[in-house]
Image (tube, rainbow, N blue to C red; front, side, top):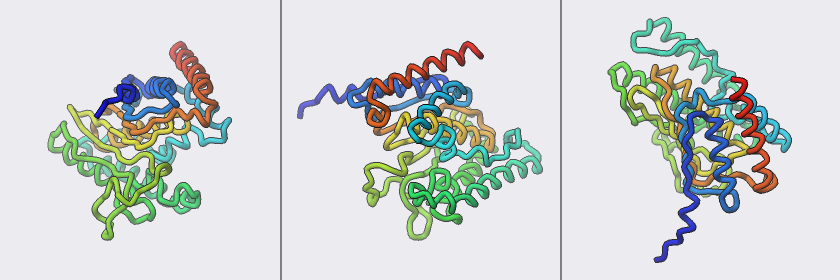
Length: 293
């Protein structure tokens, strides 16, 4: 057996404070790899709730719409449809009065109901026939309106942990890939029957961890399209994290993404030079945002 050192060059790690910087860094890193792709890519964002820049969002939106792609917030809404959430403006704590707890619970329930009301319409789109990311989170396995609500269950469990004063936990997760068993119970995360090489779902799993009172998310992608979906994915994940933190009373911790295959999409964006042009515009937008702030 002979180890090929060239293969080790494609493993990549990016650490950033905010999501905008993280997205620019990982796109730049993968764009520079052979073929514009990399394996085993990890992105760590220490303060994801502080990291979205409006000028960068405008740049990415313009690039996507010029190519007939969905905009940044359309992509973000596949993970967390924030427009459907009537934010009460306060967070859960163990000592919260019952009427305030009910207000938080009602806001979450209304979000779930509003989204599921729209699911039959969403499933008319061929790509959504197997469900959407958010439908799989709130009605597993996501194809019907009566599945298991993973988010509601995780929120109840995390509130119980918080009430008992537990500031460290790694027992919660959200399954996106796979199918339920015949009874609709056991969750299969990576099913042997799934032989698709591309397509939904690229996001397969979300792990929830609590450490020192901060709730962190780890999202696992089997394939991550960095230009078409990457920035919107990060926004959606950060919004999901903020929702979980508000509903459970934990502070926001790290947001991390692991991608088995990350793609700068040279074939769709005029090669390395085309992606480099996008990166140049993105860096200019970040610099202008920094001046304005």
